[in-house]
Length: 76
Image 1 (cartoon, rainbow, N blue to C red):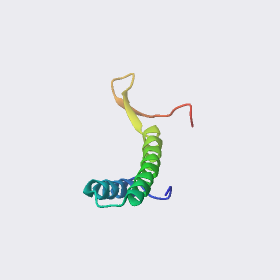
Image 2 (image 1 turned 30 degrees about the vertical axis):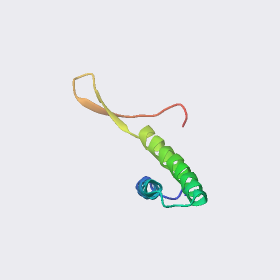
Image 3 (image 1 turned 30 degrees about the horizontal axis):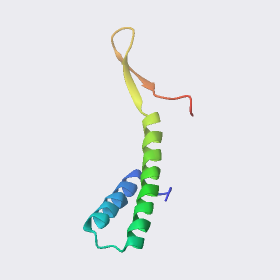
Image 4 (image 1 turned 90 degrees about the vertical axis):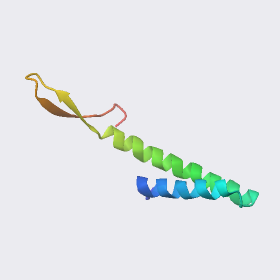
């Protein structure tokens, strides 16, 4: 699952939600589908957090011009 892109994970999560909302799954299938959704959610969240750490921030420099800084945390 980790090899999925963020977009692929979100697409699969949307499909899972749709299937669960239809209500025509057996209890066992619904639980299995829900578990897969939780795993996909964690993978997507990890990818999103990783992307957020790489975001470039535009800051105002000393002479009023915009300069770019890399957003990093101590966790890297």
